[in-house]
Image 1 (cartoon, rainbow, N blue to C red):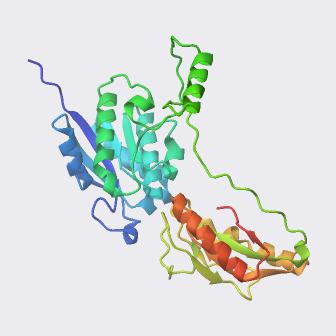
Image 2: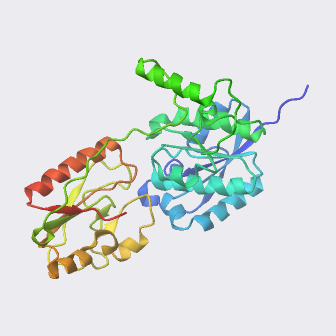
Length: 351
């Protein structure tokens, strides 16, 4: 009797789930441990004897974000040595840097023909970084959804490792990759479209063949009639805070905001403000805060008379992974704050 060979799995996690520490350990070096670590213990249980976690690789989110190529190369040395059938990364939930690290490692593994699966929340920036080339299992925003995310990763990962055919995203439970395949349907396109329309009009259930996200329709405000008499304020979702982040605005999934002043400054020198945003490389912004807040440019416009004045305070939060509800609440609070300060218009510099 032939006994199926167990699938060999390498698991990648970040420093938090490895039990090393939080943000203070974001620069933790790439580390290898034999067997499962942290959520890998649950992963082994879910595998139920069909596979083994032969090794765990982990490092700090910040380290991976600073030099993806070098850290990926180091990680791949361990992976090649272990010769796994499958690489699983995460779940990263809605942690932006963690998601980007999972995306990078999975893409690198696939380039060497090693099946790889990750899992993260749909709003994680890692999704955009790899969804066309890597299978991503949808996850909730937090680790409360750990078990179901790992179950999805195992279910799909085992199929990939065994070389079995993988069906459509809706059937297999992964995020659509954008790949389209021709299928023969007994019902012509026009008839399917009419059937869906009739079901919609009659209040019956139907499944669209094109998924369109539902977003609020926001009417643009009327333009400022006279800029020369306007007082302009700056708001930022780029995580701009004074050094030390006194209001503890998180680098991801923020629900709070703060007000800071650049009164008397014609430009923002290095060290006056920093970005704690967890979804992009903040090095250049920290070297020159005006890259994000544009105080130098706005002061110039003020001096040349194009605007009446620049409001001395700016409002700040971090939009990385922010939930729609939280961001709407912050937006309403900002509008109330700015209106009470007599501001005419607002500039939201690009992140």
